[in-house]
Length: 383
Figure 1 (cartoon, rainbow, N blue to C red):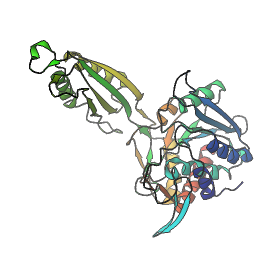
Figure 2 (cartoon, rainbow, N blue to C red):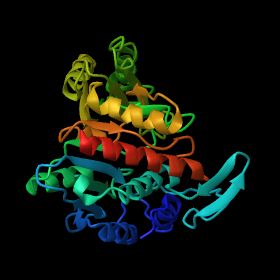
Figure 3 (cartoon, rainbow, N blue to C red):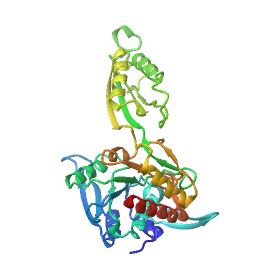
């Protein structure tokens, strides 16, 4: 099997895998791993109940056992992608190489987020002997979607077979301006909260016979918008609350609506939990006669700077000449689940084109990332 990351990336890109992914892209991945000595375990989750429109998700856990007592290093990621959308200059699922000023780019949906990183890790470990230690891949088809049946199901699978890694690298595209300038040592938490105020519908000319929920909702949102949750911490930016939706099901100009609702999203640091923020919002909603329904997507977490982050930084600097910034910025990722298994750090390609039309990765970056991952693997298994 080839260890060229460009060839491997192209093979993964050519297997369409709009979330939730299953089937062909996992066939391609398995075909890459089996010749390298990996035992590959695939399973479906989330088939849904009868009458449900929920689609099943495929997951893959692959492991190559090292000597008894050796370190276990895991790479985690996903092969599902967001829908390509309109306006591509090429077929998003027929990868295309183009020469551009400054180098060569490989185009395709998932090139950056994150089939390129998956391919680089496989290319890197192809040159790591099995005697070096245990290596595993934790790959889901449900990261870009609801993330209900993906990495969390893989964690259950790993716990059931008592295979817990010592360290986990997530290959999300963390670099900003050039490969190597940022790695993620934590993430803020996320909670979305639906708010609702019940009133009584009536004619606008007879307000005494109705109960308008809108003034109550507006007052509630005003109080929420005025909240200053914190000033940030040593490793996290300030938490922020954003109003993301207001809905009043009223198509008539002369009717006082009977109900009004809204949604807010809070990204929070380690001074809070999803539950504590939900309670705070609930108290404000109660004052205005509203109800809340919180959905916590994940809690904040931090892998404190130490041996793992130093190992990563040295590998990145050796190949790029850049000392990466250790950051907790950005949105959520599946690292929010994996941190319950082992210390986890995220590092991958430049994220400038992820989720965009004409998503593309620099060919040079694929080769450099492969070299970085090889250094990380060698150092982690020997530490």
